[in-house]
Amino acid sequence: MMKLKTVWTVFFLSIVSLLLFQSVWLSETYKLKKKEIQESVDYQFAESVEEELKGRLKKSSLEGEGMQIMDDNAARAKMEYQQGEIFEVGGNDVLETGIFQYILHFSKYPFRFYDLDSVFQNKLTFSGVPLAYLLTYKDSTGTILEQTGNLSSSRMGKAFRTGTLLIVDGKRVQAIVDISTAVIFKRMAWLLAASFLMLAIILVCVICQAKTVFTQYKLNQLREDFTNALTHDMKTPLGTINNVLSLFRDGSLENNPKMRENFGKTAMEQVSSLLRLVEKILTIAKMEEGKLTLERTPVDLPGIIGELKNRFSLSGGKQVAILTSVELGGRMAYLDKTLIKDAIANLMENAIKYSGDPVKIKLDCYIENNHLFIRVRDNGLGIPEKDKQKIFEKFERGAAAGRKEAKGFGLGLNYVKRVTEAHGGIVVLYSKEKGGSEFTMVLPLADSEP
Image 1 (cartoon, one colour):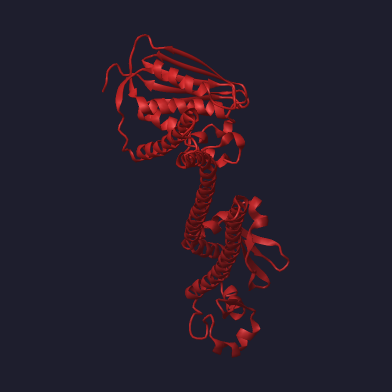
Image 2 (cartoon, one colour):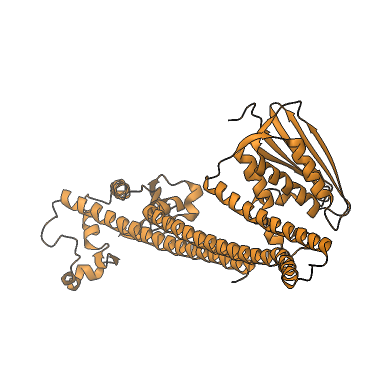
Protein backbone atom coordinates (compact mmCIF):
# COMPACT_ATOMS: atom_id res chain seq x y z
CA MET A 1 0.00 0.00 0.00
CA MET A 2 1.52 3.32 -1.10
CA LYS A 3 2.09 5.99 1.49
CA LEU A 4 -0.60 8.60 2.09
CA LYS A 5 1.77 11.38 1.00
CA THR A 6 2.25 9.63 -2.35
CA VAL A 7 -1.52 9.26 -2.74
CA TRP A 8 -2.02 12.98 -2.10
CA THR A 9 0.75 13.84 -4.58
CA VAL A 10 -0.74 11.65 -7.31
CA PHE A 11 -4.21 13.08 -6.65
CA PHE A 12 -2.94 16.67 -6.81
CA LEU A 13 -0.96 16.04 -10.00
CA SER A 14 -4.00 14.38 -11.60
CA ILE A 15 -6.18 17.40 -10.88
CA VAL A 16 -3.51 19.84 -12.10
CA SER A 17 -2.91 17.82 -15.28
CA LEU A 18 -6.64 17.64 -15.98
CA LEU A 19 -7.08 21.39 -15.51
CA LEU A 20 -3.98 22.11 -17.59
CA PHE A 21 -5.22 19.91 -20.43
CA GLN A 22 -8.64 21.57 -20.27
CA SER A 23 -7.03 25.03 -20.37
CA VAL A 24 -4.86 24.16 -23.40
CA TRP A 25 -7.83 22.62 -25.20
CA LEU A 26 -10.03 25.66 -24.52
CA SER A 27 -7.25 28.00 -25.61
CA GLU A 28 -6.77 26.21 -28.94
CA THR A 29 -10.53 25.95 -29.47
CA TYR A 30 -10.84 29.66 -28.75
CA LYS A 31 -8.20 30.46 -31.38
CA LEU A 32 -9.89 28.25 -33.98
CA LYS A 33 -13.31 29.77 -33.27
CA LYS A 34 -11.85 33.28 -33.50
CA LYS A 35 -10.24 32.47 -36.84
CA GLU A 36 -13.50 30.95 -38.04
CA ILE A 37 -15.44 34.12 -37.15
CA GLN A 38 -12.79 36.30 -38.84
CA GLU A 39 -13.01 34.28 -42.04
CA SER A 40 -16.80 34.46 -41.89
CA VAL A 41 -16.73 38.26 -41.50
CA ASP A 42 -14.24 38.55 -44.35
CA TYR A 43 -16.51 36.45 -46.55
CA GLN A 44 -19.64 38.40 -45.56
CA PHE A 45 -17.93 41.68 -46.33
CA ALA A 46 -16.88 40.44 -49.81
CA GLU A 47 -20.43 39.24 -50.44
CA SER A 48 -21.78 42.61 -49.34
CA VAL A 49 -19.58 44.42 -51.90
CA GLU A 50 -20.72 41.97 -54.56
CA GLU A 51 -24.42 42.41 -53.67
CA GLU A 52 -24.09 46.20 -53.72
CA LEU A 53 -22.69 45.91 -57.26
CA LYS A 54 -25.48 43.54 -58.29
CA GLY A 55 -28.05 46.00 -56.95
CA ARG A 56 -26.70 48.75 -59.20
CA LEU A 57 -26.63 46.44 -62.18
CA LYS A 58 -30.31 45.64 -61.75
CA LYS A 59 -31.20 49.34 -61.66
CA SER A 60 -29.17 50.12 -64.79
CA SER A 61 -30.07 49.36 -68.38
CA LEU A 62 -26.73 47.63 -68.78
CA GLU A 63 -27.75 44.37 -67.14
CA GLY A 64 -27.88 41.54 -69.61
CA GLU A 65 -25.80 38.89 -71.24
CA GLY A 66 -22.15 39.60 -70.86
CA MET A 67 -22.76 42.15 -68.09
CA GLN A 68 -22.85 39.75 -65.16
CA ILE A 69 -20.37 39.24 -62.40
CA MET A 70 -18.22 36.37 -63.53
CA ASP A 71 -17.37 33.66 -61.04
CA ASP A 72 -17.05 30.80 -63.50
CA ASN A 73 -13.71 29.37 -64.54
CA ALA A 74 -14.64 29.83 -68.21
CA ALA A 75 -14.75 33.61 -67.72
CA ARG A 76 -11.05 33.75 -66.93
CA ALA A 77 -10.18 33.89 -70.65
CA LYS A 78 -12.14 37.11 -71.12
CA MET A 79 -10.06 40.27 -71.48
CA GLU A 80 -12.22 42.21 -68.98
CA TYR A 81 -11.57 39.62 -66.27
CA GLN A 82 -7.84 39.65 -66.85
CA GLN A 83 -7.75 43.44 -66.63
CA GLY A 84 -9.52 43.50 -63.26
CA GLU A 85 -8.04 42.73 -59.85
CA ILE A 86 -9.36 39.54 -58.28
CA PHE A 87 -9.77 38.15 -54.78
CA GLU A 88 -10.96 34.81 -53.41
CA VAL A 89 -14.26 34.16 -51.64
CA GLY A 90 -15.05 30.61 -50.58
CA GLY A 91 -12.42 29.27 -52.98
CA ASN A 92 -13.92 31.00 -56.11
CA ASP A 93 -12.23 33.79 -58.06
CA VAL A 94 -14.59 36.76 -58.18
CA LEU A 95 -14.16 39.90 -60.20
CA GLU A 96 -13.28 42.66 -57.76
CA THR A 97 -13.38 45.59 -60.13
CA GLY A 98 -12.79 46.36 -63.75
CA ILE A 99 -15.28 46.99 -66.54
CA PHE A 100 -18.39 46.62 -64.34
CA GLN A 101 -17.51 49.15 -61.65
CA TYR A 102 -16.05 51.44 -64.29
CA ILE A 103 -19.11 51.38 -66.61
CA LEU A 104 -21.57 51.77 -63.73
CA HIS A 105 -19.55 54.62 -62.28
CA PHE A 106 -19.71 56.60 -65.52
CA SER A 107 -23.32 55.57 -66.27
CA LYS A 108 -24.71 57.58 -63.38
CA TYR A 109 -24.80 54.49 -61.16
CA PRO A 110 -21.76 55.12 -58.99
CA PHE A 111 -20.78 53.14 -55.89
CA ARG A 112 -23.20 53.80 -53.02
CA PHE A 113 -21.34 53.52 -49.74
CA TYR A 114 -24.39 53.53 -47.49
CA ASP A 115 -26.04 50.77 -49.54
CA LEU A 116 -22.97 48.67 -48.79
CA ASP A 117 -23.32 49.56 -45.11
CA SER A 118 -26.94 48.43 -45.10
CA VAL A 119 -26.15 45.11 -46.77
CA PHE A 120 -23.17 44.41 -44.48
CA GLN A 121 -25.12 45.34 -41.35
CA ASN A 122 -27.91 42.91 -42.29
CA LYS A 123 -25.43 40.10 -42.85
CA LEU A 124 -23.85 40.66 -39.44
CA THR A 125 -27.28 40.74 -37.79
CA PHE A 126 -28.44 37.52 -39.43
CA SER A 127 -25.18 35.81 -38.46
CA GLY A 128 -26.58 35.34 -34.94
CA VAL A 129 -24.29 37.63 -32.96
CA PRO A 130 -24.43 41.30 -34.09
CA LEU A 131 -20.96 42.80 -34.08
CA ALA A 132 -19.84 46.39 -33.66
CA TYR A 133 -18.13 47.54 -36.84
CA LEU A 134 -16.77 50.50 -38.81
CA LEU A 135 -16.88 50.78 -42.63
CA THR A 136 -14.32 53.04 -44.32
CA TYR A 137 -14.14 54.30 -47.92
CA LYS A 138 -10.74 55.71 -48.83
CA ASP A 139 -9.11 57.13 -51.95
CA SER A 140 -5.81 55.97 -53.41
CA THR A 141 -3.86 58.17 -50.98
CA GLY A 142 -5.57 56.66 -47.92
CA THR A 143 -7.72 59.68 -47.22
CA ILE A 144 -11.08 58.74 -45.72
CA LEU A 145 -13.92 59.74 -48.02
CA GLU A 146 -16.74 58.23 -45.99
CA GLN A 147 -17.08 56.06 -42.93
CA THR A 148 -19.94 54.73 -40.82
CA GLY A 149 -20.56 52.21 -38.04
CA ASN A 150 -20.94 51.84 -34.29
CA LEU A 151 -17.42 50.73 -33.30
CA SER A 152 -16.02 52.77 -30.41
CA SER A 153 -12.59 54.32 -30.75
CA SER A 154 -11.37 52.47 -27.64
CA ARG A 155 -11.86 49.12 -29.41
CA MET A 156 -10.27 50.10 -32.70
CA GLY A 157 -6.84 48.79 -31.81
CA LYS A 158 -8.12 45.30 -30.95
CA ALA A 159 -10.68 45.00 -33.76
CA PHE A 160 -10.35 42.70 -36.78
CA ARG A 161 -9.70 44.34 -40.16
CA THR A 162 -10.93 42.72 -43.35
CA GLY A 163 -9.04 42.93 -46.62
CA THR A 164 -9.42 46.19 -48.58
CA LEU A 165 -11.55 45.79 -51.72
CA LEU A 166 -11.02 47.97 -54.79
CA ILE A 167 -14.06 49.83 -56.11
CA VAL A 168 -12.84 52.18 -58.88
CA ASP A 169 -10.01 54.66 -59.52
CA GLY A 170 -7.97 53.30 -56.61
CA LYS A 171 -10.74 53.84 -54.09
CA ARG A 172 -11.13 51.01 -51.62
CA VAL A 173 -13.50 49.91 -48.86
CA GLN A 174 -12.64 48.07 -45.68
CA ALA A 175 -14.54 46.77 -42.63
CA ILE A 176 -13.18 46.95 -39.09
CA VAL A 177 -15.13 44.55 -36.84
CA ASP A 178 -14.95 44.11 -33.07
CA ILE A 179 -14.79 40.35 -32.46
CA SER A 180 -14.63 40.44 -28.65
CA THR A 181 -13.94 37.59 -26.26
CA ALA A 182 -17.58 37.62 -25.16
CA VAL A 183 -18.70 37.15 -28.77
CA ILE A 184 -16.34 34.23 -29.27
CA PHE A 185 -17.46 32.55 -26.06
CA LYS A 186 -21.08 33.08 -27.04
CA ARG A 187 -20.40 31.27 -30.30
CA MET A 188 -18.75 28.53 -28.22
CA ALA A 189 -21.65 28.30 -25.73
CA TRP A 190 -22.69 24.70 -26.40
CA LEU A 191 -19.11 23.59 -26.76
CA LEU A 192 -18.17 25.23 -23.46
CA ALA A 193 -21.19 23.71 -21.71
CA ALA A 194 -20.32 20.24 -22.96
CA SER A 195 -16.66 20.78 -22.08
CA PHE A 196 -17.33 21.88 -18.51
CA LEU A 197 -19.88 19.11 -18.03
CA MET A 198 -17.30 16.57 -19.16
CA LEU A 199 -14.69 18.20 -16.90
CA ALA A 200 -17.09 18.06 -13.95
CA ILE A 201 -17.82 14.39 -14.58
CA ILE A 202 -14.11 13.59 -14.81
CA LEU A 203 -13.38 15.57 -11.64
CA VAL A 204 -16.14 13.75 -9.77
CA CYS A 205 -14.73 10.42 -10.96
CA VAL A 206 -11.21 11.41 -9.90
CA ILE A 207 -12.43 12.62 -6.51
CA CYS A 208 -14.47 9.44 -5.98
CA GLN A 209 -11.48 7.34 -6.95
CA ALA A 210 -9.25 9.32 -4.58
CA LYS A 211 -11.85 8.97 -1.83
CA THR A 212 -11.89 5.23 -2.40
CA VAL A 213 -8.09 5.12 -2.20
CA PHE A 214 -8.07 7.20 1.01
CA THR A 215 -10.80 5.03 2.52
CA GLN A 216 -8.87 1.91 1.61
CA TYR A 217 -5.74 3.44 3.12
CA LYS A 218 -7.61 4.31 6.31
CA LEU A 219 -9.11 0.83 6.54
CA ASN A 220 -5.72 -0.73 5.97
CA GLN A 221 -4.18 1.51 8.64
CA LEU A 222 -7.05 0.73 10.99
CA ARG A 223 -6.56 -2.99 10.45
CA GLU A 224 -2.86 -2.72 11.23
CA ASP A 225 -3.49 -0.59 14.34
CA PHE A 226 -6.21 -2.91 15.56
CA THR A 227 -3.96 -5.91 15.04
CA ASN A 228 -1.22 -4.19 17.04
CA ALA A 229 -3.64 -3.35 19.83
CA LEU A 230 -4.98 -6.89 19.80
CA THR A 231 -1.47 -8.29 19.98
CA HIS A 232 -0.30 -6.08 22.85
CA ASP A 233 -3.45 -5.78 24.98
CA MET A 234 -4.82 -9.31 24.70
CA LYS A 235 -1.53 -11.15 24.78
CA THR A 236 -0.81 -10.21 28.41
CA PRO A 237 -4.16 -11.28 29.96
CA LEU A 238 -4.31 -14.44 27.87
CA GLY A 239 -0.73 -15.26 28.80
CA THR A 240 -1.53 -14.72 32.48
CA ILE A 241 -4.58 -16.97 32.28
CA ASN A 242 -2.59 -19.63 30.45
CA ASN A 243 0.19 -19.57 33.07
CA VAL A 244 -2.29 -19.84 35.96
CA LEU A 245 -4.09 -22.75 34.30
CA SER A 246 -0.74 -24.46 33.73
CA LEU A 247 0.05 -24.13 37.43
CA PHE A 248 -3.32 -25.56 38.37
CA ARG A 249 -2.89 -28.42 35.90
CA ASP A 250 0.58 -29.32 37.16
CA GLY A 251 -0.59 -29.27 40.77
CA SER A 252 2.09 -26.74 41.71
CA LEU A 253 -0.36 -24.78 43.88
CA GLU A 254 -2.03 -27.67 45.73
CA ASN A 255 0.16 -27.26 48.82
CA ASN A 256 -0.16 -23.47 48.95
CA PRO A 257 -3.84 -22.46 49.32
CA LYS A 258 -3.12 -18.72 49.69
CA MET A 259 -1.02 -18.55 46.53
CA ARG A 260 -3.64 -20.62 44.71
CA GLU A 261 -6.31 -18.15 45.76
CA ASN A 262 -4.25 -15.16 44.65
CA PHE A 263 -3.42 -16.69 41.27
CA GLY A 264 -7.03 -17.71 40.77
CA LYS A 265 -8.19 -14.19 41.58
CA THR A 266 -5.68 -12.73 39.12
CA ALA A 267 -6.84 -15.08 36.37
CA MET A 268 -10.48 -14.20 37.03
CA GLU A 269 -9.70 -10.48 36.83
CA GLN A 270 -8.06 -11.00 33.45
CA VAL A 271 -11.04 -13.03 32.24
CA SER A 272 -13.39 -10.28 33.45
CA SER A 273 -11.32 -7.68 31.61
CA LEU A 274 -11.56 -9.62 28.36
CA LEU A 275 -15.30 -10.20 28.85
CA ARG A 276 -15.82 -6.46 29.40
CA LEU A 277 -13.95 -5.73 26.19
CA VAL A 278 -16.04 -8.22 24.20
CA GLU A 279 -19.23 -6.89 25.78
CA LYS A 280 -18.21 -3.34 24.91
CA ILE A 281 -17.64 -4.26 21.26
CA LEU A 282 -21.00 -6.08 21.09
CA THR A 283 -22.81 -3.16 22.75
CA ILE A 284 -21.35 -0.65 20.27
CA ALA A 285 -22.34 -2.92 17.38
CA LYS A 286 -25.93 -3.13 18.67
CA MET A 287 -26.07 0.65 19.08
CA GLU A 288 -24.84 1.17 15.52
CA GLU A 289 -27.56 -1.16 14.23
CA GLY A 290 -30.22 0.40 16.47
CA LYS A 291 -30.91 -2.93 18.15
CA LEU A 292 -29.88 -2.03 21.71
CA THR A 293 -32.72 -1.78 24.23
CA LEU A 294 -32.04 0.13 27.43
CA GLU A 295 -33.01 -1.55 30.70
CA ARG A 296 -33.83 1.50 32.82
CA THR A 297 -34.01 0.82 36.52
CA PRO A 298 -33.50 2.96 39.65
CA VAL A 299 -29.73 3.32 39.90
CA ASP A 300 -27.73 3.69 43.10
CA LEU A 301 -25.25 6.26 41.76
CA PRO A 302 -23.44 6.80 45.10
CA GLY A 303 -22.87 3.04 45.34
CA ILE A 304 -21.60 2.79 41.73
CA ILE A 305 -19.24 5.74 42.16
CA GLY A 306 -17.95 4.35 45.45
CA GLU A 307 -17.28 0.97 43.81
CA LEU A 308 -15.42 2.58 40.89
CA LYS A 309 -13.40 4.73 43.27
CA ASN A 310 -12.22 1.66 45.13
CA ARG A 311 -11.37 -0.17 41.94
CA PHE A 312 -9.34 2.59 40.27
CA SER A 313 -7.65 3.85 43.44
CA LEU A 314 -5.69 0.61 43.45
CA SER A 315 -4.49 0.87 39.85
CA GLY A 316 -0.98 -0.53 39.75
CA GLY A 317 2.00 1.51 38.61
CA LYS A 318 0.66 4.97 39.51
CA GLN A 319 -0.43 6.88 42.57
CA VAL A 320 -4.10 7.63 42.03
CA ALA A 321 -6.09 10.06 44.17
CA ILE A 322 -9.82 10.16 43.43
CA LEU A 323 -12.11 12.80 44.94
CA THR A 324 -15.84 12.18 44.52
CA SER A 325 -18.95 14.30 45.09
CA VAL A 326 -22.56 13.10 44.73
CA GLU A 327 -25.42 15.58 45.22
CA LEU A 328 -28.73 14.25 43.91
CA GLY A 329 -31.08 16.04 46.30
CA GLY A 330 -32.88 12.82 47.14
CA ARG A 331 -33.95 12.22 43.53
CA MET A 332 -33.64 8.84 41.85
CA ALA A 333 -32.13 8.36 38.38
CA TYR A 334 -33.62 5.74 36.06
CA LEU A 335 -30.79 4.53 33.86
CA ASP A 336 -29.31 1.38 32.37
CA LYS A 337 -27.04 0.50 35.27
CA THR A 338 -24.55 -1.66 33.35
CA LEU A 339 -24.07 0.82 30.50
CA ILE A 340 -23.73 3.88 32.74
CA LYS A 341 -21.31 2.13 35.06
CA ASP A 342 -19.13 1.01 32.15
CA ALA A 343 -19.23 4.50 30.62
CA ILE A 344 -18.04 6.14 33.86
CA ALA A 345 -15.38 3.44 34.20
CA ASN A 346 -14.10 4.22 30.70
CA LEU A 347 -13.75 7.91 31.56
CA MET A 348 -11.83 7.10 34.76
CA GLU A 349 -9.64 4.54 32.98
CA ASN A 350 -8.73 7.13 30.33
CA ALA A 351 -8.01 9.71 33.02
CA ILE A 352 -5.45 7.36 34.56
CA LYS A 353 -4.02 6.19 31.24
CA TYR A 354 -3.43 9.70 29.85
CA SER A 355 -2.15 11.32 33.05
CA GLY A 356 1.28 11.47 34.56
CA ASP A 357 2.17 10.34 38.07
CA PRO A 358 0.55 11.08 40.51
CA VAL A 359 -2.96 11.04 39.04
CA LYS A 360 -5.66 13.32 40.43
CA ILE A 361 -9.27 12.66 39.42
CA LYS A 362 -12.36 14.62 40.45
CA LEU A 363 -15.64 12.75 39.92
CA ASP A 364 -18.81 14.82 40.39
CA CYS A 365 -22.41 13.75 40.08
CA TYR A 366 -25.20 16.33 40.49
CA ILE A 367 -28.60 17.40 39.19
CA GLU A 368 -29.30 20.75 37.56
CA ASN A 369 -32.23 21.96 35.40
CA ASN A 370 -33.77 18.48 35.49
CA HIS A 371 -30.60 16.97 34.00
CA LEU A 372 -28.10 14.59 35.54
CA PHE A 373 -24.47 15.67 35.21
CA ILE A 374 -21.68 13.11 35.60
CA ARG A 375 -18.32 14.88 35.32
CA VAL A 376 -14.83 13.37 35.33
CA ARG A 377 -11.91 15.80 35.56
CA ASP A 378 -8.21 14.85 35.50
CA ASN A 379 -4.76 16.44 35.58
CA GLY A 380 -3.60 14.59 32.49
CA LEU A 381 -1.95 15.40 29.17
CA GLY A 382 -4.96 17.19 27.69
CA ILE A 383 -6.28 16.94 24.14
CA PRO A 384 -5.10 19.09 21.20
CA GLU A 385 -7.82 21.20 19.56
CA LYS A 386 -7.54 19.35 16.26
CA ASP A 387 -8.23 15.99 17.97
CA LYS A 388 -11.28 16.97 20.04
CA GLN A 389 -13.81 15.75 17.47
CA LYS A 390 -12.19 12.61 16.19
CA ILE A 391 -11.36 11.14 19.64
CA PHE A 392 -15.00 10.05 19.88
CA GLU A 393 -14.66 7.96 16.72
CA LYS A 394 -14.42 4.21 16.97
CA PHE A 395 -10.85 2.81 17.10
CA GLU A 396 -9.41 6.33 17.12
CA ARG A 397 -6.94 5.54 19.91
CA GLY A 398 -5.94 2.44 17.97
CA ALA A 399 -4.00 4.75 15.64
CA ALA A 400 -1.74 5.58 18.58
CA ALA A 401 -1.30 2.00 19.73
CA GLY A 402 2.46 2.32 19.38
CA ARG A 403 2.62 4.99 22.08
CA LYS A 404 3.18 3.75 25.55
CA GLU A 405 0.40 5.87 27.07
CA ALA A 406 -2.15 5.05 24.38
CA LYS A 407 -2.53 1.28 24.43
CA GLY A 408 -6.01 0.03 23.81
CA PHE A 409 -8.57 -0.42 21.07
CA GLY A 410 -9.87 3.14 20.96
CA LEU A 411 -13.40 2.12 21.93
CA GLY A 412 -13.74 3.87 25.29
CA LEU A 413 -14.86 7.37 24.31
CA ASN A 414 -16.95 6.06 21.43
CA TYR A 415 -18.69 3.81 23.95
CA VAL A 416 -19.25 6.75 26.33
CA LYS A 417 -20.71 8.87 23.53
CA ARG A 418 -23.06 6.15 22.31
CA VAL A 419 -24.27 5.23 25.82
CA THR A 420 -24.96 8.89 26.59
CA GLU A 421 -26.82 9.42 23.32
CA ALA A 422 -28.81 6.22 23.89
CA HIS A 423 -30.07 7.85 27.10
CA GLY A 424 -30.99 11.00 25.16
CA GLY A 425 -28.03 13.03 26.39
CA ILE A 426 -24.77 14.53 25.16
CA VAL A 427 -21.09 14.46 26.12
CA VAL A 428 -19.39 17.79 26.74
CA LEU A 429 -15.61 18.01 26.51
CA TYR A 430 -13.37 20.71 27.91
CA SER A 431 -9.65 20.19 27.55
CA LYS A 432 -6.45 22.14 27.21
CA GLU A 433 -3.26 20.58 25.92
CA LYS A 434 -1.01 19.74 28.90
CA GLY A 435 -3.74 21.17 31.13
CA GLY A 436 -5.95 18.17 31.82
CA SER A 437 -9.38 17.16 30.48
CA GLU A 438 -12.96 17.29 31.67
CA PHE A 439 -15.67 15.02 30.27
CA THR A 440 -19.28 15.61 31.30
CA MET A 441 -22.17 13.27 30.55
CA VAL A 442 -25.40 15.32 30.49
CA LEU A 443 -28.48 13.08 30.78
CA PRO A 444 -32.14 14.14 30.85
CA LEU A 445 -33.57 13.05 34.19
CA ALA A 446 -36.73 10.93 34.34
CA ASP A 447 -38.78 10.97 37.53
CA SER A 448 -40.06 7.46 37.06
CA GLU A 449 -39.17 4.29 35.20
CA PRO A 450 -40.36 4.46 31.56
